[in-house]
Length: 556
Image (tube, rainbow, N blue to C red; front, side, top):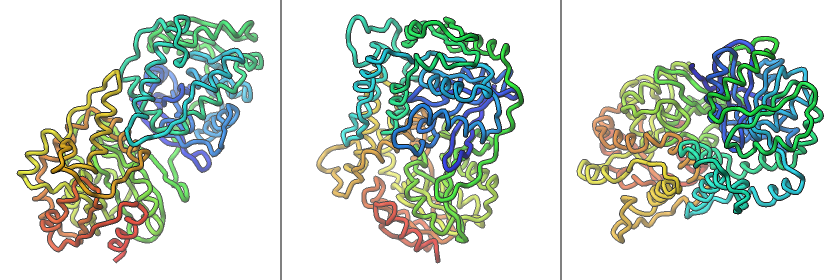
């Protein structure tokens, strides 16, 4: 079963979702702080007979947050109604997991005619005193720190949930009977929490304030309250008392596939009216970043875009391994008079492909994306590994590149490259204690402090102004960890590539620049000497100031 990913515009925000199949719509809501990725098995099973649509809750995954300082469950229910309107769905079968079930029940209470059946895969319910404890203890503030300990603390807190429930109450009576969580699931949900940041607590806190037990009595929709073996919420079902007519409880298999098959049978007995329309096209949203997925031969590529104007558009190719998310501030600053587009290269960030492509293949993907977007001639900005990809793209498309900016090009002399490459990017192995997070954090932080980053001797100290914002460093780390298996391989491809030959073949006007804290700053002059007629510059660290310097070159 093929699952595709999409965005839909809902007012001034975007909602990300996964979709499979066709026919009557089944809409799925995930648990916090995860994303629709956690519902992959359910989407696959439901999609065999229905149009299965798994939404990222506002503020989680890739969905924009609600523009409400303290959102309540009613706000999330109304946001769901708006999303279904945008998708053209009048009625659906509604599935909610954990916190997603709380949103689902409030939606079903408010809009019973829009729900053919509701299915709750774990329903959060607590007595008032326990809900008060949850609000007080469950959600420590999110505060990124320069040491990176915020990452490990969050990772271990989520892992702790499989040991004690609630995680902060360490007693024999609260000891969970389930085995340890799957490391890949722990990793994915930790990344979702890192991405949500300070907004991580908003969806959870709204659940803890919601009167789940009382809400059950307002249901007029056929509803299955299900519990699964080893689920921390299975005991909550005992608190619900007598259910309204048409509602029932079930105990389902612990494994996702077995549970999904039973839920699909429930949908078959309550098929919603109508058919889900095809995914709507994504139109640009004014004054904000608009995202979409573009299908190419290698899978789906995430594209970010902002800005309008008559100036030739700018294509941003981010450093890889990583995503284009850390470049959003620069993109906004460059978008005052032009359209700015960025991609997550295949195998990086939120784009598909769990394997490493060579640089020419990556450049070919860039060509396919621009063809799809109808962009014939562009300016190109590439940073670090993205500069290598930009040089390859320029070599393949001489007439398509108006002006080229190579920022922090990895133009290492062969002797330095051969010495550095073996130790620069060791493979990332997920560890139950979260130590892999600190290892990668140290590497990213040390890139500004030492050259090479793994040698902390006095001879390697870099006296530069660092970007010491741990929130920005967290964004970069998340982009890498989304495709952590490709980290070492991507660097291996970059170090093996003959960048000198690519630079020597460039024929368009080119600016070779770098900020002083860039790990490859010392190689700017070598890169510039290889590009015929290149201009050189040291650019500011701050994205807004950097944009001014780059625009001066592009606007000639």
